[in-house]
Each structure stands twice: as structure tokens, then as C-alpha cells.
Length: 251
Length: 356
Image 1 (cartoon, helix red, strand yellow):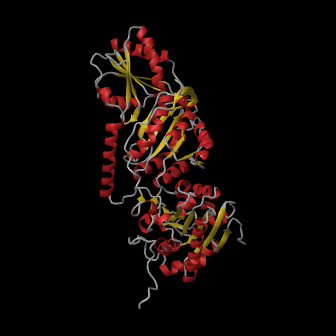
Image 2: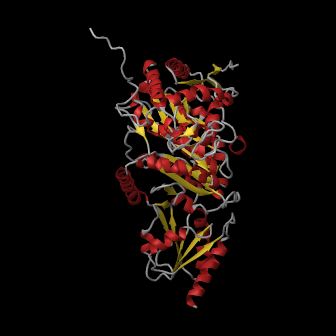
Image 3: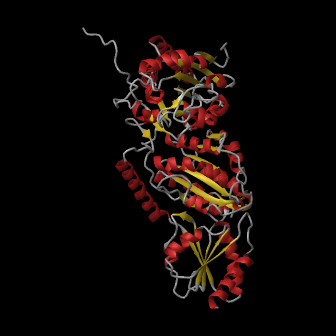
């Protein structure tokens, strides 16, 4: 008898992903899909695709999906969850969408303790629009709108979303993870599944920040991009649990 | 008369929304519409419905977007600068074919403007500030009774067309009190099930997605043509107006909302001066009632458009009348509510100028 060791998650459709070679969005999609499938909630889940590289997420996740205006995912999620409290609601947002144009909606959803899960993919750049500076770009990082590198005095410093949200009382679970090697991928999966489990248990607002790659716009090979996450990004964005079940336990 | 109660316009709007079957309200404070969310914050919760004060108008309309996309009956309310902020969400809702009701209680503009009654958002309501070829169905009632009746029906109309419906009043209707009867039944209309809603796959067959993105231009054109068909249907079925004193008038006034009520008093003054003046009162601003403006009797000497703005609806009147009659304008703006005598004088002045 042949044994199936691995198969694509039922949480993903058959639509080919639109992401660039070497981008880790695909891995993160897989982790979200597997978590929803394993928790048996695909039939009661509503996902929200934001604007950015993951705009087509509504074609990739095998659950009801809503594509929403740039930055407004947490508000859209609030509208769904408040009227459908038994649904599992998640948003899938990049750093431009969440940390720049959508920061107000995200902070207030967190502060109200909306029982939704935010999958926050931080790749330190605007990927979809062609590599412009993001609020999370590192100091010195060259982008198409910071050709001399990000300068703290001109552009501010990379915004630390997880650290910032850890100060909000109503946040139930908050962890920053990465997917630059198999061990980190497994860890990311645990974090994502835990967040959805908390939501199922109606514990409140959960957010997983995932450090991701953008080899094309960073001008790096996929391998060097993973290395850059491990060596450079994690220095600015340290991995770890920032909050668990409403009790801040980070550091 | 036994069913009548005395109510403030904004509170009556809120109660009418509950009677119209609203499931959820999302809004942000702004004068002069605050009594709508205040009233709903007291009564929605006890009925097991959702009331949430959002962090901004932008967030509020996107909460409306989410609730509507997952199948709820939902509304928001705001006033001029707040409606400006909601335009992105309204365009997305029209593009994604989502129903909702938006109450706009107009104040003076532009910018922060003022807080007194105005009709300077006619263009904002009927043209919209959002991107793309879309329309919002807009009703502009003139009394609290009419506001209540249209408000109760607005949710059905929104659901029927899968499109935002706006109830557009000015601060005067929002703030004044009138006797109002809530017992009038809503006209029955067939509403198809919301099998398109993305509220979880367990609630329908297959996988539902809500989206306004079409990267293929031919697909997007087809989507727009489909929307356009719907707008034509709404134009055929939802155009509403009232004709007042329109049997062979010397002059015709076109006015809506509060301004129409002022004009009702003005034509009484003019009747005493032996001038017969009729009123065409658009109730739906989009679709705009073109037919009555095209069919004005040949003996009519001219049209006076009256607005509490410096002239916005006048463009639609000109389009509808197709140059058949001389058209003049009377308006006060910035929150100034004109006296009936001013309107009467404007007609007399129009008459004098026309003779000269």
C-alpha cells in the first residue's frame, strides 16, 4: 500500500499562485490553508484579501473570500465578524497595506479586541507596485523611492508593528515569525494555527507578523533573500511572542 | 391620526431603519446627524442587532462593506465632509454589487464648511466622489414622514439592485420635529436570496468571492455593461417625483427636499399676485425625473430652479428640459435657509426680466 505523506491543503484552490519566483507568500498561503483545514473551519471561514501582492488571495484560498479597499481589511473584517460572530474571519495584508495606509483600522480593530486574525506579511517593501519604500523598510535599504537608501532623518525608521500592538490591552495573541528555513516555517505554522485556535475560542484579536521575502524588488537571489531576512531583518524585527492571551510576556 | 408620534428627524430616521430591518449600523460622529447613531446605540443592542462606533468614516463604510459582503442588512449615516470620506467605499460597494443604505444629512461646505442645513452635496450624492462608472440610487424626501417611508423601503431597494441607496436630507430635516406615522406598510417587492454573499461556504453552495477587481479590460467592460443594465432598470422603476399645481402653470419651480417645502409657500404668495406657478419636486435625485421636465406645457414661460446651494441640480434640469424653456436659478448657500418671499421675488424678477 502506498501511503500519502504529503498533499496540497484543501484550504487552497487549484489556481496557480501569481507570486514571483522565490517569494515566500506561497509558503505563508500554505500555512494559513493548512491551519484552517486542520481546525475544520474552511466552511465557516471568510478571508479578506487586501491590496498589494496578495490582492489575488481571494482566488487562492478555498473559503469564502472578500477583496477589500487598500488598508481597510481590519474594518471589513470587523463588519463581517460583528454580523457573523461564529464565522472565522482573517485578513491577509502586506506591510504597505497594514502598516501604512491601514494602520488606523488595524490599531482600532485590535483595541476593540475584534475576534479576528490578521496575517501580516512584512517584506519591507511595496512589491506589487514595483519596489517602493515601505514603512517597514530597513535603514539604508535602497528602494525605487529611496534610491540612496532609507534615511532615518528623511523617512523615519522601520515601524515595529508587533512591538507597538503589544501595548494594546485587548490583543489576545501576537507573534512575529519568519519562514527563511524549515524550522522557522514549522514555528510559523504553529503560530498561525494558535491564532486561529484562539479565534475559535473567541479570545479576541490575534495577529501573526511574518517576515517574508521579495527577491525581485530587493535585487537578490531567492537564497540571498532568505539570508537577508535571517541576518538583517530579524535584527530590526526580532522574532518571538509579544503577547499571549492578553498577558504581555515578551522580554 | 392615532398612529402619529412627534419625533425629531434624525431619531425618526433611526427608528425607520430598525423598522426597515437593519441588522447593523456602523458610523462616526458628525453634526448634524448625531442623533441617528445615538438613537441606534440605545435600541440596536436590545434587539440583538449590531451598533458600532467606528474610528473614522473611512472605517465605518468599510465595516458596512464587510457586513454587506457577508450578507447582512447594513447602514451608515454621516454628513457632508464625512460622506466625502466614504466615497472610496461607496465605489467599491457599487463595483462589488453590495447593498447598503447611506443616510446623508447635508451641511454647508466646502471643506469643514458649517453645520447649518444645505443642499450643496447634490453633486456629491448624484455624481459621487468615488472612481468609475457607477451610480448610487438617491432619494431626497421633503418631510420627516416621507423620510421615514423611504428609509423603511431603502433596504429592500438596495437588496433588490445589490447597490448602495442614499437617503439625502439636509440638517433641517434632521434636526426639526414633526408628527410621523410609522405604520405605513413597505411596498412588497420580490427579493432574491443572497446566495452570492460571502458569509462562509456552509451557508451556500460553492465558494463565494466578493470583488471589484477585473484586470482584463474586456472582462471589466462586461462587468460595467452589466452594472449599466441595472442602472437602466433602476431608472425605469425607481424614478420618483411629485407634481404640484402643474395644470398649465405660468412658471415652473424645480426644487427638492426642504427647498421644495419653502417653494410650496412661495407659490401661495404668487397665486395672490395672479401668477400661477407649479412645482416639479424630484424625490429621486438619481435616477433624475427627466420626463416631467420634458413635458411641461407650451404656455409655461420659464423654469426657476431653487436650491440651497449655488446651483447643482440645475445641470440636470437643463439636460432634461433640452433647451425648451428659459431657465433661471435662485439659491442661498452656506447654511442660509431662504424665506418663501425670496423665492416669490425670484419668480417675479424672472417674469420682469423675461418681459424686458
